[in-house]
Length: 230
Image (cartoon, rainbow, N blue to C red):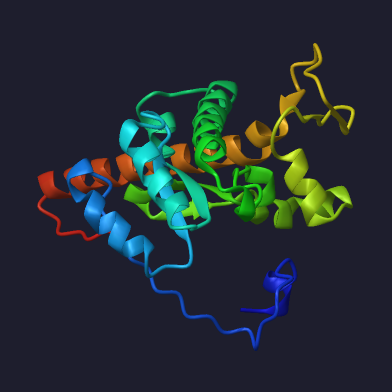
């Protein structure tokens, strides 16, 4: 990894190469023993939560197991694509959905945390929450977008990350950030304007391309022409 990507890493390290071993343990209640066994040989835990279904009973069980083994967990809000394709949520509805999931997870972490481990709650603007769509193999943290927008706004990445979560609204017309939404239609929450909407637009555009490719394929088949799309 380049030094630029590791500048936020403050602990002692030797070189820039890392080997990460991932142990995928089922989340179903019947496999709780496998989760416990995996936690005993790991340094961290990535807890995956469905953004639509939210924090379920087994999610609480897994988090409690991680804390019992003194493993510091991070959170992934998964199936983000369902918000675009299935539920068709607008930006504010999606943000509220993600916020509820994260807050519910933090309630569990606060309930079972060991004081010796310090604050274990997870926050998107701290880089301990990621958003993903496992079916389509993509994911991001706010760091990803902060790196893109920091230079544009003339600020550092950490401050940009804080702008991209919570009650931070940006109005392109005035080029000003506010803590509350104004009456202006162009004043939109930072997360929605700079993260959610761009991904939704890319996803929508790709779906249209797929539909056109399928239609062209049908036309070629009816004409007896062999055509392969890459």
